[in-house]
Structures are given as C-alpha cells and as structure tokens.
Image 1 (cartoon, rainbow, N blue to C red):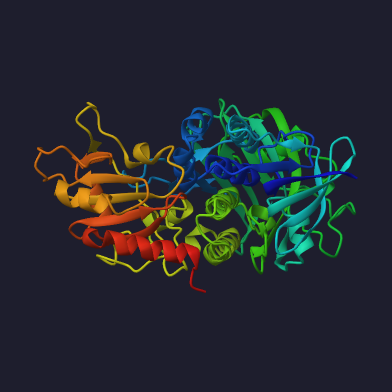
Image 2 (cartoon, helix red, strand yellow):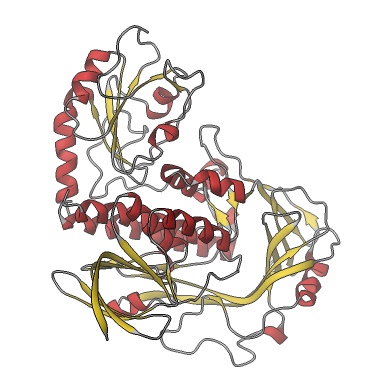
Length: 544
C-alpha cells in the first residue's frame, strides 16, 4: 500500500455535484482532492436543464458567462395530446429575475466546471475509485485504487460523497435509501430533427387511451445546435432490459439512470416519433442513446460525523422539471461554504449539522413533487402558474425557520432570513455611466457580504464600522447627492429604487448575504453590531 497523504476534503465523484463542491471549496481557499472512478467524462446528455437559481450561484463564482455562451434557452413546452395542440407551458419569469431557464448537455456542464476547478488548482483524479473508508474523531481514512491499480491510503478531515445513485459513500455509512422504482422503462436519444417548430421550446406529445391514461409519451428537450433535442420515450419490448433478463438485481441495486446492454438505434426512436411527433420529421445525427429507468429515493440523513452525501447519493427522483442536478449542485454549495468556515477555524464544527437540517427538507419536497408531476402531471399542483414556474426555477428554495435563520424583521412578506437574496438592477456609482446589478457587486466575493441600506451617509458609515465582514453600502434613491460616501466601504445608489422595491427595507436596514446567495440575517441598521454577533453565534452553535 502506498504512503499516507492528507487533504482537507476528499470528494468522491466528479459529476456536476462533485465538481460544484470542489469549485466552491477552492473558491473559499480550501484544498481538496476530487476522484472519479471513470477514466473520462461520459459523452451523454443526461441532465440538461439548468435552473435560474443555479445560474445565480454560478454567477457568484464568475462562471455564468461561459455557461450562457454554451447553452441554449428553454422558453417553454409545446404540449400535444393525441395529435391535438394544447395550451403551451410558458416558462416566463418576473423581469427582476436575472436568468431564464437554459439547456446544456451534462458533459458540457462538467467540462466548464472542470475547467473552472482546474483554474483554481484542482484536477480530477480519473480512474481512481474509493474502495472503503473509516472515520474517527480527528478525520477520515479512505482507501483508494488509482488508475494504475495501486491502492493508496488517504487521510482527510472530511469526505463528501457525490458518487451517484450507487454511492459507495452512502453504502459505507449504512444510510437508508427509502423509496421505490417506476415499472416503466424509457429510452433516451440525442438527435437532430428537420421540423420547423419554434426554437427554444420543448415538446411533450402523448397518446391517451379511452380511459384517459397516457399509454405513450414523447418528450423532447432542446439542446445547443440546430434542431437538436434530447428525446425520451417509452422503450419497445425488444429493448426492455427486464424482458431480456438484464433488469436490476434484488437487494441494494438501485434501478435509476441508463441501464447496460444494447441501446436504441435511430430506427427505434424514429418509430416512436412517427407515431407521436406533432409534425412529420426525420431524425438524424444520433450522438448517444440509452435505455433508462427511474426510481425515487432519499436518505434518512445527509451526514454522519465527518462524512456527507450530496446529489444522487442522497436523493433520486423522476427527471420531471430538471430538478435533480440543480438540487445536487445547491447541496454541494450549501455544504462547501460551511466546511470552508470550519476548516479555516472561523466557526465550530457544529455548523455542519445545518447541512442536513437545511437541505434534507428540500430533497424531500423535490422527490415528492417530481413523483407527483410524473404520475399526475404538473397540472395536479394547485398553485398559480407564477408560483409553479418560480418553484421549478428553484427560486423559492429557502430555510426560514432553519437553524441559521435569524429573527425576522420588517414586513413578513419581504425577503427574510433563510430566503433567497433577490438580485436587483439600477445600482449606480458616479464613476460608471451604466447601472450595475447586485449580482455584479457580489460576483467574486467568496464569503458572507453585509448590505447596509439607508439614506444617510453618516448612519451607513457608523454601521459599517461594526460589521467585521465584507460590507457594501446602498444609499436610498431619495438621499441627497452630496457626501463623500462611506470611508473604506463601497457605496452604491439605489437609483432605480429596485433594491427598496425588492428588499422592502423597514427604514435603515441591514442584510447578511450568505456565500450561497441566501439571506442569513435582516436587522435595523442601529442594531448592526448585536445582530451580526447573534448571527456569528448561530454559525458557531446552531440551535438543534
């Protein structure tokens, strides 16, 4: 066995979730190793939907531009039943949301994240498999097998399992993974069409039997490139893995994702398209195809001691609404900034208990909702269309009432501790002839940021002296134009009144924005010092 090495964090699995964990850790100045048993990135367009909330998180990292340049917009979905066009699903968001829905093949998402992480000094160790691990009070001992077949013992302070539905980390912890599998099998194909349907719209076409049940469904998600789609549809009998004795074995084998065996050929996909496509089309340019199955499961806890699970290792569910990868990316970012604070000695390890407390309820909600949508359709949700779209965009994910959410302050329907910190436009400085967005101001700032809002420069300066954290001052639109600003603190004017409209400050008000873009605290400006002291206390010893 090779010599023992050490690192702060070992991440098992270099898909979008593991890469996001590494990206946030490295951005926070924490060292990590990132291992993946596969020798190379898989060329499959598996997870393709990128939610607006994920783009906001990537914007904070400085990654959004490269993603947008590679992606294609998702404007909505055209819906057909028995060949008849139904009311389309419009995915328009309020104008103050900075990003819309986007589609990007998973291999492209991984490539962009991999390049970002490499730029911060971490390279994926490919062909390296986590065999086993054990933990004690001081750290985790992991046994790895490298691409050359050499076994290595690695000592790390924390282990994060981002190793998918068949997670070695989850099994090693003995976590339960309760749920079930859908009996249906589907096939996926990454293909080109020659139809002239509107660009940027997905297609859902189903055939309903006389009893109203859908006995065949075709779902097409646009991909970058002319008329390219990732199509999914029911598998024909001759490709069924269950019918051919290739189905999942009993025990802990999870029936989720692409199955082994013979993938569909273009003719298999074309046969279904001939029956269900809203307009005649000829498929071509098949890049990849697979038979796949869907399960829905979630672990009983996201952490045990110094070991954590995130993404598919913690929760799997139907791909309805493209929630899985995005939920996993947010798991990773939530955990990573907390690990960074603990590893830098800025707070105690009790903070890490808030990962499960904040993220497992989100996972439970996503699993329940996607199963409901997969079996009953999105129309089964009683909420109004605006709420439905905001929830699908993951803009309503919040941690109000969680262990880190301080006391509410101001209007109850204003953004409160635990909620997403809204972006806003129209922030100006005298030296720039164009307005900034709040995301522009937060971009590249790795840690917590305090936002102080008031009309009076003196009040802003007094509060800014007591924060002890990176601080940005926002002067109210009605404030007089004179004054030297806040010494040592960047100051922007709310020239469009957007900050006041979206944050609804109750007079002079302060806010703490967490590294993951959620609000940590909201307080009157004259109580800045005690409010931030309370927030630091919550980070050091979150209430159970």
